[in-house]
Amino acid sequence: MSNLKDREYVSRLIVSVLTNRITVREALLAFPKKNDDKNIMAAYYALIHYEADEDMRAFDFAFKEEQDEYLNMIAELLSAGKDLPKNIIKSYEGYFPEIELPKSKFFKDFIKTMMKFLNVK
Image 1 (spheres, one colour):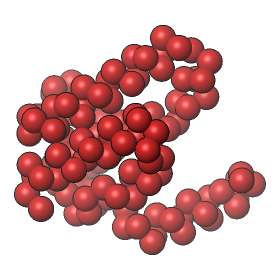
Image 2 (cartoon, one colour):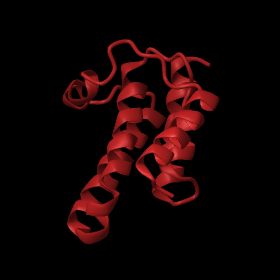
Image 3 (tube, one colour):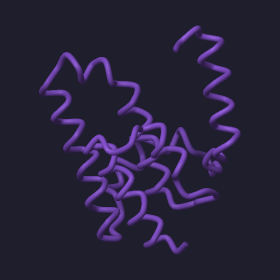
Image 4 (cartoon, helix red, strand yellow):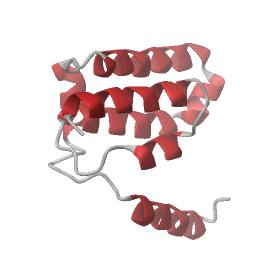
């Protein structure tokens, strides 16, 4: 896939999460593999942070709205093939020093192991 097609695909994944058609986990597993586009990697980590803030969103409607708008903006820019603002990419760059996004089976096994370790169902 070209970067434009990958960006459009990631945009659809984000919209699917925001409209509750898929879970964040499903979206992360569906991300393009071996992608070096910093915009896509930033979107990946934005979704991870979105998931991590789930409890906060449940109790703070203003925070939920702001976070939904933020992800929607990312989706719109990616869908149009545009770069994300530099400040967004910079805020996530520390998480992706030229990484390869997780492979589906490895990621699933890792999550299962972590859930057992943390005794989470």
